[in-house]
Amino acid sequence: MSEAFPGPVTGHVPVLRLGEVLLVTLQGDLHDSTAHQLQEDLAETIARSGATGVVIDISGVEIVDSFLGRVLAEIAAQSSLLAARTVVVGMRPAVAITLVELGLTLPGLRTALSTEVAMELLTRPTPSSRSAGTRQESP
Amino acid sequence: MPEHEADGTLGSPTDEVRDFLRRRREQIAQRWADEPLFRAVFTLSRDEAVEAGKAVVDALAQVADAQRVEDPDAAGFTTVREQLARMGAARSRAGLSTAQVSSELAALRPPVENLLLADLPDASPDHARACVTTLSVLMGTLRVVVMQTALTEGQALIDRQRLQLLEVATPVIKLWDGIVAVPLIGTLDSARSQVVMETLLEAIVDQQARFAILDITGVPTVDSLVAQHLMKTVAAARLMGAECIVSGIRPAIAQTMVHLGLDLGTVITRSSLADALGYVLHQLGVGIVNPTPYGAGER
Amino acid sequence: MDTAAGVEARLPIRSDMDLVWVRQHVRQAAAQLGFGLVDQTKLVTAASELARNTLVYGGGGTMETQHLVSGGVRGLRLTFSDEGPGIADLEQALSDGYTSGDGLGMGLGGARRLVHEFAIESSPGAGTIVRVTSWTGRPPGPREES
Image 1: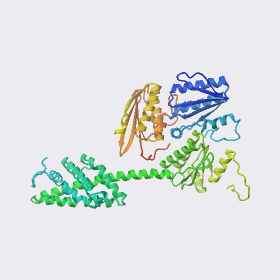
Image 2: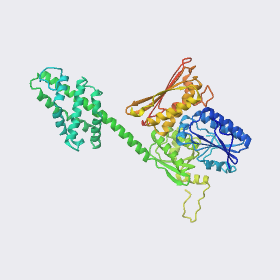
Image 3: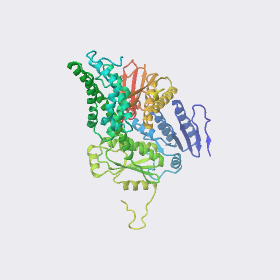
Image 4: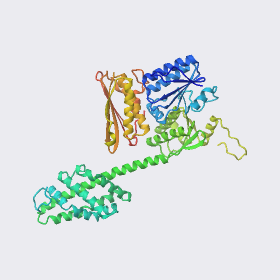
């Protein structure tokens, strides 16, 4: 079951709810204001719905600069304050290489290769040990 | 410009050479067609060689007309540069050294010089010498042009081969469902590290591999640059949601790294590929059962 | 060059909408000149960082793109200029972690690592010009490592 949270107004990225998890799919080139809007929307939606996880699929994103990198890190941090875990999914190789070269390794961010893996991570009660593809501690 | 001009001492040596080239275009091209350079490059037909020769003569005449016999960048060479490059490249591919190509080019001068002298029977010795010198300079410039283009071609070829080598030298092996490995052999420079990183990350996506093992058993030395590349690769893999393990750090390398003060940070390392695989299988919750005492050993 | 039509342009940087145009133009130009995917991404990201600097610290300005050819290799040069307050201490501005606005402090130093050539001219009160260039096909030379 899935339902769309606040209607897709201009400048809003739709936030889908799948059980306890909120799913956001970013596509193409994002305006700075859209990214900021998403950050706000997510905080509100988590608080309202009591979601325990957020999955942000960025497989459709061609570039992540320091601004968007910071927005993603802040979403993770604010979600964590609201007791939800965030997983960023599907970063493209070229984007990952560029971010590392840029000096942005986003240490606090959990990542996964696909939405399936992310959902598995979030729905499973705390995994026994360091689980594949996620980082709990910073380098 | 008059097609034919009376032999004599009129005009500067450069003009004389220009007129001579225009006048004897056909004969020069015919003689060149018999020289090894043209014969070896234009194997299809002699006419082809003659045509190519004429194009070169035209270019030389144009350069002389512009009074730029010493200038390899003269506009006159533009039209034949590509053809000359092809000729030089063809000889290089046939296995000739640069010096050999150069001497084949030098062999183009005597036939032209003989024709020129034959055209100047009544000229004063001084004027004849001046004309021959001008022709020599012009032919020397032609040689420089060919060598220049050949070197550029050669460099492009080396670059291409280097890229091909980079690609074949980076195999990605699927070890298990969700586990890929890249055994690295040889020196890791910046360009190669870049290819390794891209290849590995692409494989992670293609195979949806949660774990990747970079095995550096075949890497002779690990300096700070290599260490940095390894850490960058691991960091990029993490951003994508995969864990990268570096294996094959031999005792001697481990010692050097400590001496150099190199730190791989939070990179997970194992001494052998087998150890790394064992670690990853454990992480994935895959157990290996030994049905007989001779089954797969632990290490 | 036949394939380079549409590469050269001068774009305004006045709003975050313009940042999107800058990124799209650089992406298209780089693709047209034959940059590989990773190099395209690096260049677009660098452009995004620099354009944002122009907007946020320089109070807006322009980006100019230029197509270069050298020794058979194609290059793309991006020039960002603004008439803002300028930068007093360039060395400090280029060091990692430095920021005078609300970034992660990766703007200039980070962008420099994503391109082959980087030049900056600035003095207090005289605006800032940042010029970056990347080349296709050239094997990456020994890049300065941080």
